[in-house]
Image (cartoon, rainbow, N blue to C red; front, side, top):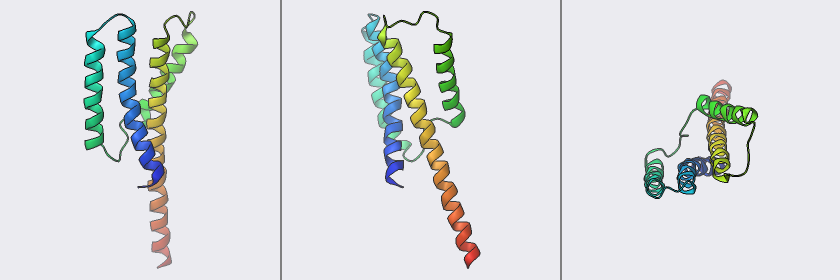
Amino acid sequence: MTTLAKVLSIADKVSIALFVWSFALLRYTRGDTVSPIVLSVVSLLFLIYLFKNSKNKPWGSKIMDCFVIVMFVLGFVEAEDLSLEEPSLIVVGVVTVLAALIDLFYYLYLEYYDFKQNKADITSEKSE
C-alpha cells in the first residue's frame, strides 16, 4: 500500500468521525447536553471499529459520495436566507462535503491503483 493510500485511509476514517462530531456540535449549540456526549462516544467507538475492521477500503461508495456532494450544493443554491447566525450548520455542511470528497478521492485512487497494477500485469504477460 502506498503512502498516499495510507494517508487517504486515515483521513477517510477521521473525516467520518468528524462528521458525527459535527452533529454533536450542532446539538450542543442548540442547548442539548446529553446527545452531544452520546454522539461523541458513539463516534469514538465507530472510529476505533473503522481502524480495526476497515483497514484498506473506503467507507462509502462513489454513488453515495456524489449524491452527498450534489445534494449539499443544491441545498446551498436553494437556500434563500442562508445566514451565519448559526455557524454550526455551516460546520456540519463543510465537514459533510469534506468527508464525502475524501472518501470519493480515496475510492477513485484505489481504482486507479488497481488499474495500473492490472495494466502492468498484462504488459508483463505479453512480454513473456
